[in-house]
Image: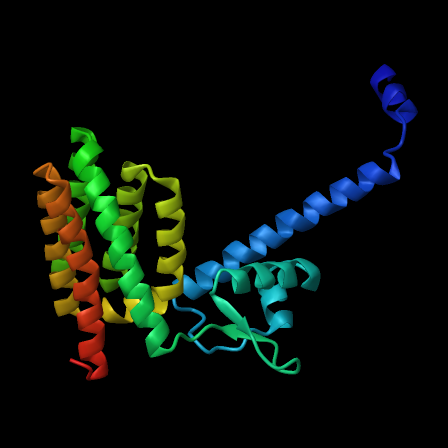
Length: 238
């Protein structure tokens, strides 16, 4: 009874406090919408060029149009969606060939730098964990499971970034992976490309384990540039 009386006598929240609560709730809903749309893009449920119907997305994600639009603006800044004419709204971004090539070239530099750092600082447990991930990808290869291979591939590269412990490199690399996701996913749908990719993963780890930062850098760059060559071959560009 006393607790009830105390609650009834408590002062009502001020307008400023209510406004802060509303803003935090809107931010939380925008983050929920952002994560949901990003997941749909990364899993291929929303293909490059697909128009984004705000009403349908809001209903699917359980949010109102305000937080949804905030999420779309954030995804546009990250390069995953793009705006069009006012009457057409936003769509999943479709990269042109020049943009894809630049992403490969820049990712190669960052991957090489990451591998060089690992050659200097990776611990035995970190190396063991990375080799286990390469083995898991090999198992996915044997099973012919392209979706699992791709998910493990993303986790492997993320683990390398974590082990390298260079925050700016990690942020740039992750942003570029998101942008290049549709192309990489398509490339790794091919079993031969997956086999080549995982052999390169093993070669990177061998170079890192040797402790030679320059050799590790070359192996890291070679992996991404080999991916670029496979992409060009798929375009008929050599």
